[in-house]
Image (cartoon, rainbow, N blue to C red; front, side, top):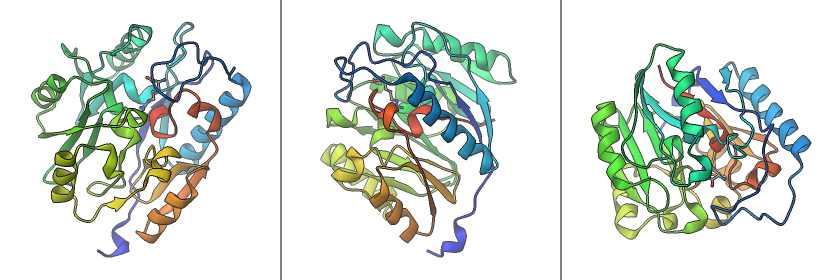
Length: 275
Ligand code: ARG
């Protein structure tokens, strides 16, 4: 494939500052409640990421952080939007349940069609959208957080085919820790995070994917945000930066070490809004 295809497209994102960020409960293997977080550092790193996205020409909306919701900084989990329609989140763990309401209120203030979910799902944590693949394809993860019944529900709400993929490694508990869209029709993923059958499905649909290894996945390198040309990844993910560069993209590294303590990186803290 010619690298001239790697054209950026202006995006609209939603982020929530980590003003109340702590690790006071552990709902994924990365969270360690015995090590205190550095809130000032978390906030500084978050601001640098926001400024990086703005400087690349993207619009960034900010959601007001709420006290008592320490994971609210992971804004990607609050909903999933495609073509102006929003499939709301319903969190697996009660500690995060109220975050869905804050996101619902955000969408109520715009011209979105919002659907409240019946089934447990964690928004863009477990859903990715490839507008240029097969006419518009949704990839969806299950196994740890999102209920597979939510995949069918999302398909009904959003009117796009949803491909269900089973996650099998607890370290990679959300789809966005194991797979990312590099542009409208290309992905990168870590195969071993998926069941053998799901690996076959991915190989069939995306034979030209950039393949990541375990070290990439553990560096949260798959937890990236791409505008189709610039691929924003954390500074631990240098090896992945070179892989995407070899595929024709331009890596942009941002330090996000403090937010890894909650089990997330770049993508987890950035929701894409698709009007
Ligand atoms: N502590 C959060 C949780 O376990 C981290 C969420 C990370 N977000 C993501 N999109 N993977 O729910």
